Image (cartoon, rainbow, N blue to C red):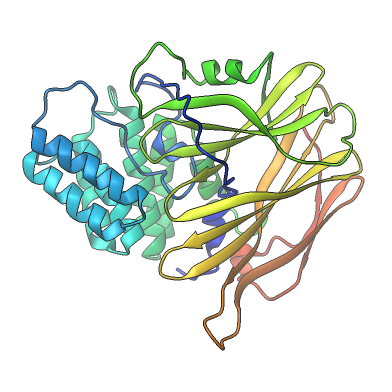
Length: 369
């Protein structure tokens, strides 16, 4: 798989905002699990809270999550393997092992762990866990250059639980080039606590691994066109190290939310750069720094508007991906587009040559729900 197959990070417009100490939790049976958020932690499975399990397993599982959060993928792999030594064939530990092994670049371990987790998980009682492991398996298949196997895994994941992240990968594999479609925002909510409650994230559960921060972090912007009154960011987590960023806009009817606008994790750090206005559209520009063995910088664009009764958004679209040069070296650019918004179209122009499978240049109609 080429480096330019970076459409995987179209959902990775992660926002670097500070963690809030007021955390809310959700029951594990919710319909948006580990694979629903961004790339960095999408494969991490939920905690096995309250079950009677060996102490060594619990300690190793927590150590693995702590190491993953610190960005030590190799150390996390070893810790999750220790958890499995205490509790062999545990579906949760296998799922989390498969993700950190993928991040560490050990694709054979990642594939084996994902397949074993899928076999061990009961889709009827643990659909989020099975869906997360299928997502992990799809990521490994993509990296190994087997798009057919990746597509099969993603489609099986979606059959268990909807996920914008997985849907994007399916579109990218099924339709080379432009495959984006505007989506209607969730809402309206009287306040953002209503959005948290809609996710099933409330204060009645005591599982600290799942929470929602209903307090909006305002995003600076110029004078907004009607009917938009405010732009903000919300954070929520549905599993350890699985933090999603949600883009929220307010109109006279209330708050509307683009859920899973991005995610944050130990290998990435992202921020909104600007909110511009063009022909009654909001243009949100953001960037992501990827910190692994290399340092990659990605830029994204999200366009929101109202054409009928409710707001909708297109994106985040990956429009630039480049590696920071080593000392004395030249910047490596995987893809680079210039984006402008006209009255009716999103106009994308290639600034540099890109992989034909990721050629999104052209004038794309902007019609929102």
